[in-house]
Image (cartoon, rainbow, N blue to C red; front, side, top):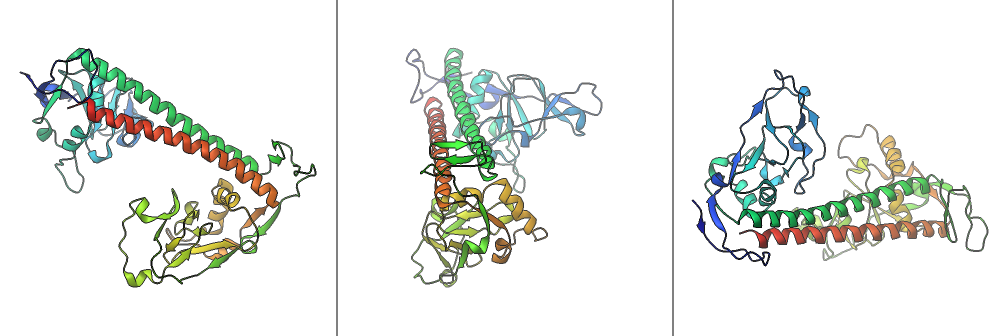
Length: 403
């Protein structure tokens, strides 16, 4: 039996009644309906943990039950799925179809709350906090026996519907922005393939699908030539520093970036830091895992482990042109071919880097290409900023609309 309690920090003006409170076991139930794929004739869509994105409620894919051997949980459309295995991954979903899922996923159904509200509830910090009170250590799992006894506050059905509808509209906005960012990234990748294959060439006023381009005086850009890596870049081994420069992490996601900006926690001794190499703005670094596509660019001055190879152009180039080229599928394939057989995690040598031919357009065309791709990066960054702001807005709403 519910009792009256306090209200949330943020709510719709037409509601003023205090929230009720019940233990979680009285608010929602964990479905126990199961099937054995070996003995059923039905072939359901099957959701495994890897099919659910982390923290976004997005379905990434599915298989079919006929291809499975283990017992599965049955669910129906609009029920809420929550990954009980490694709950810190925050895997939740509200499918719009009937199907089955891994036994490591809870199928949740509202009792005193509607499922649309429940879907938002499992995203709150309180729900995730108690879900992470694990019943295991090596392979942590959320403990329903513990969770079911925790009291939760909840509003009337009418207010639940209003909250769920509003937060669903925010989710839709997040989905739209996510797709926008993805489309921009895909567009840039496609354009890069055409530019670096010379299917597209630049003109003073834009680009063309023709094989030739014109410079700013109306004449054609010179034909592209190719140069070996060592005809453009030399290795740099400068250890002249007082260990007062920031230590750089070499990351495929961020390039070369100060460790403290990405919470990159690796302890190093003062003695070892003295052997680190100085990296200047505009340098390239061969990543230790370069076979996955990483010759990374640095926007920072700092120092990095002596295990890395630092590259610096000794002829005039546009750094942004090569920053983009080193991330193309074409270059990554050439890199992989060159280092085939090298064990996982081993860095390629400067000699191996030098054996790969690099495109070398005129500096004017390099600059036009780099500026165009930079303009796309700005659009991607803006879309990403909008997306992150909306996610933060949603996070704040969950904090203020639930108690």
